[in-house]
Length: 480
Image (cartoon, rainbow, N blue to C red; front, side, top):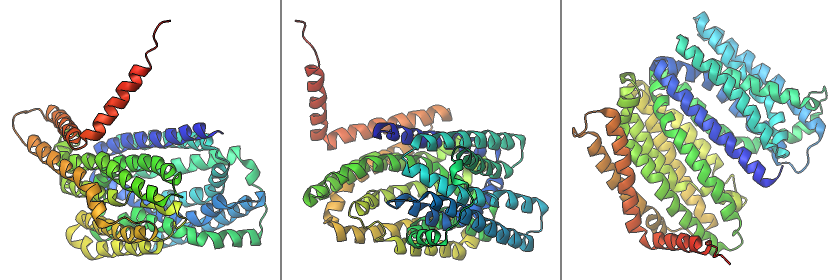
């Protein structure tokens, strides 16, 4: 598969998943109560945490090795199956000891079965990635996500509550594994080599730390929050976090997809790389800051207009998480930079400490302030990540604090001004209809920000305009 085709399939995969996630999230928010959403998220987080502990250890070495023997895929497959069955057995034993409800035990059994599907699918997925077969990866995701989406939404509409989220998750992972296993049957053979397995696991133990750190935040947080604050708090936090994370992850991934190859091309010219890194931060801030400052400004109007009053308590959490997303822009390109300089694990252990600190904060505060503890924990985790990244980046390039302020201050100032105007417009009584007011606020924010951007960056805007105008003029072909 050529480079362009690979990029297009990766783009299709990411865009499709984001769109499907937005639609399913919207429908779940409409048909589920906060406690039902929270309960479903907790049960999905259990296998996510267990699989996250070992997925990186299994898959990453198979992808990053220079050569992989065919028997190695089969060896890792059977190890994954045995390991996952052991994890399922231990989890169900704990469930029998601590869960009284047969309904909860059934939900746990369904959700934890995905540990087998996730871990068993790692060797198949690793081979597809090694072969750059992104078309198969995308089509596998397409089929699995569609079946899971239809089932989950149907159950939500029918009133099955948390089962809607659990069954969507279970079917997505099961269908994904079955599709890969059917088309890659050569991996499923009864061979096992201890030496190959030990080499893979030895290499993977270092690569898995970062994946486990992320899993602690994504899956450990709702589990801990649910245990100390209840399912409703998890539902409110997850609702707010998803509204922020869906656009954030899409935008951040898109920007980084451009940044990594752009910075890689000039890695041998450190002065030029430092200049490009600075320009990338400035450009990213112009795109990201208004999006999330604007989201924080219209959060009350957005929730009350599109979603029902049952989510009204999440407005403050949504505003705080949107501002935290702004803060994450400060170290958006650091991972790409560390990868270019071949030090991708420079802050991995510190990030793991940050993740554990985040969970401890929830344990201490969750019982008192509920979902707000999750927001506080994410805020402290983000600040610590910014601190570790800022210290580490100056070990590979020169990026003084003065330059940092110069890069981010213009977008920050414009976004604050825009968001204040939009907020006061959203609470005004000039327009009575909520939907009309929401549309007008979005339009007002866009016009104000673009106008300020043209003033602040007038030299670059002029260059862009003249460049476009000249190109258009040069493309006019005079008749002979």
